[in-house]
Image (tube, rainbow, N blue to C red):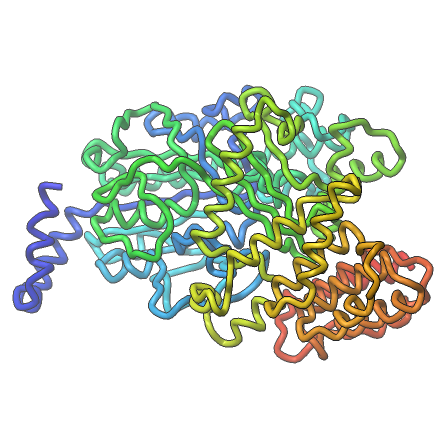
Length: 632
């Protein structure tokens, strides 16, 4: 802090800057710390320093012994692209409309990513080796990004921000065969939700093997830092990009999918910018999540934090008090739609399922490559599992609440336990307030989001209540998803009527959620006029049409079902509608499991490519078509 005051004085004097730019840059290089991020993929805090006795992680354990270990760190999203989007923007991905896995949106005009701000301040910024963002890049982000990125490429004396990302622990490496296990599969601890089979034990043991390999890579980077004589001037972060790559961790905003290891080391020279109470080998219970890291790095560099960032700096000149909650989110995962929000206070985790009519474990081609996923599903289908191992293959309760101290595997749902009512209401209120505060755009179906945004940035128009009335839409989404097929009819009737009365709402998103809710409960049997349901098949919004088609196929007459099926097949043609309309329609068709209609030939003829649609997006259509035509 003592060294930074003169720099701020010079920085405010344009004439002095013009005359003495060279000397000032030299001073800045001496008074700003280097920052090194070492990141790994698809691993939770399964490290020795986190108390995992099965783990073998000597390098990270040694780093922890001279660092601050964060006991409660979350990635915000349980899968890479939205997690990295939150990480590099300092903005929650749903606020940007960038929640869905593998998607692209425009960022608001003037929004710059924190490495861009560091570069403007004289830092050399390198990234090795993944970007993987859900947005179109706003100009050049890195001085160098790729497999050879390194601080060694900077100018002499220049401060650096360098990322080293290791993929050896990625989900795809867990299932690579052949593999001779180093960790004994017979001794591996299993979570309560996984069945105890040789395949599951092998995957978990291999997962730990890959973490050990990653640990060795971390040790290599730290050795390079020491060899270059930079350790005393470099603040080191280690964390993973989200939780374990095993099924029901990755892609799920439980603690198991969001809890990441996070170690932060401050050398003695930079102890004055460390968090309050920092000590080597210490443990912090502060809630820290990915949205906090962009403002934290800017704060450590002595730079201002832009107002659009939504995180809280954990250290440096602009450190802020501990937040009360951390938030998680799940949207479309590859070819399957879902909508889940979670929140924790560090002990309890609250989950809000907005699509409770879909099972947890919807078929994802990529996820089903893992042996654990396949054997788990096979055992369920054969009726050989008991709760809680059955839950993943069944529809979801609208509300979930777990006590991490007593139930770390999150299998005992306390949401309707009267003893925990106050806890649930407090966290549910926090989740609702968060959705309103960040103007969560995830409550728009993806095709609707892009239709409204056009060529603009979703967050920009999302700030306008006339274009995105988040309060009304959220209220309908909560009402629509608060019930399931087992709801008592006397409880359901007033809510069904309220939703059915909203089917002609002027806001298409309100109509969508009302239609979805009526579909979950079934239409009002006392309602005299069913023509309003048929009209929804011609709605101006394809999202409404698709939701209405599912409603009528489940609850309509034979004629209505035929018309609804025709609507879904029309929406599934992405050359007529769009890629996200098609994915939504095909996912709905698959969920309906229509084995009594001879439409497989129609499906085979649907286009798998469309002009202007990137291959990595259109392959989701191909995966859905392959699955349905193979089964029919």
